[in-house]
Length: 456
Image (cartoon, rainbow, N blue to C red; front, side, top):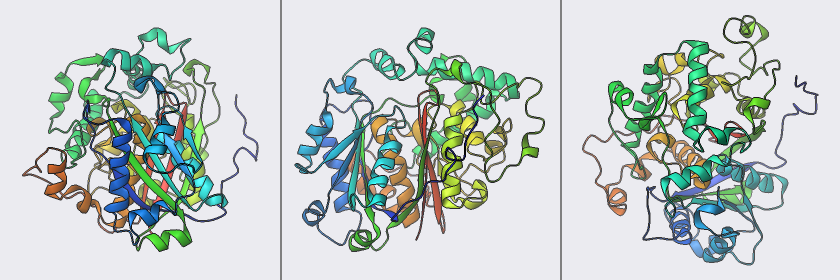
């Protein structure tokens, strides 16, 4: 059993406030042969510095940068070690220092965390975070095996070298423990594919019924293709600054109030029973009858201690008492429909065992109490892994700046990516949004970050 000491649960603090001032993304595709990774990163950076209403020109901004953080999940895909060095040179940042971060699917979130630490400590005051993934130079089968290497190769790999198989087992266990109907998971896929229809960046948009999801071809029982994230190519950039530089650059900087991380064993079978780490909106009475019946332990095989740890730290750092009440919208790491509903519980949207209530109540939908994955999420829009956690926070920043429509509704932006703005386009700007959250998740829950942004 894991027992926390007071030092383990110390709430992080920033010595200096951290702000996001600009973000940029490419569109995301299954294949992007016409541009290499350096070009994609340049495109995302160009959007960040030229299209975010900054008060300085791009060249002046470049000369204000003093540290850069890069995010790429796997060197395997592009067959290039130190790929960040090439991108760094291509973006014109040599000889400034930089680091490259790798924590599986949470690489993007971890890269933003590293950049925030640099700004908060005073080490740097203007830090671009640049992430990308090149997943189209190998076959889908080989790509799946590369990604699956981020789980324990001594245990999970025997299940078929495919993440869908790992999460399918979790889905089976979760359904067994909580009697969740398949239709509940299908609702998540329907929602996220639909919201992707209103994003010019999305790879897998679509209007689907629950029946469409349930009758779609199975990847790994019970998960269908439409319930799984996309293998993507693309890039994302987020620029973090201290308060002084933020207001020199932007009239609408967004405060990164908290970003915290949690981890758990790579091998899921090594996760031992322990007392539930309570979030601010929970008490011991919340779970007085939890360990009984079909559920005997926590976190077991159907909950993520890493997500609970990250949320515990971030909520306390940001003063969140009840996430559904205190947050205005949320981006989750919906790599699979089952991981989404697991996250609902891990971050306290509903108590453990009752995650289905969040989606079934309508809370998760646009104009609900806590709209979730208005970006389309990983299921509908992208999972270019190194870019994912960064892209989520770019979407959060644009919502808080009131610029969602600027970056999603302009017909010329759709044309830029060879698409036509749909006739049934919906404006998904959250009205009067003050605070948003994003979850970046890796492996079978080995690393998770929880980030909270708010208007100053």
